[in-house]
Image (tube, rainbow, N blue to C red):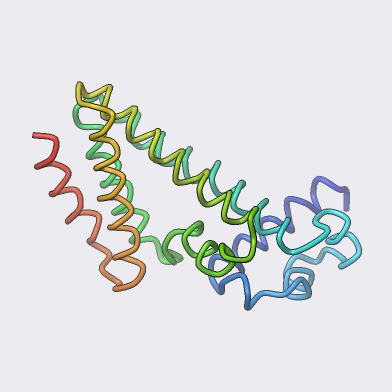
Length: 181
């Protein structure tokens, strides 16, 4: 198996296992077994678990932002795009494999002891903030309104994951609609 194929296989496996079970409960042996990539190759690709976790978060960030942006861009009216974020989140929360926010989950497990993981979480959240600020400005609102939308969105993500309220995005959407009006 070539290097690129091995790396893709390891990252896909790590993504599934870390998101489903958590980082601490998944060992490199688990990733080796599930991916079919030898432990020697695994450590050539990712010299330690922290590097694998940060690569997983970076890969997920690209996937997550692309899906969100694609959904929001399909909304023709810029004034409706901020609300489309919550519609997308509602669909995400209803996915059978939904386990909350990967960055919050990893930060909760490793943020106090891993600077790189904490930085990945901050980078993702800042990117989300900038995305929402851009949507707010495009809708003729202030950038600060994007900050308010961020708090509603993040609150919905945490609420859905912790309480099992898969409709938390719709509650946040209703609050966002009031904020935007």
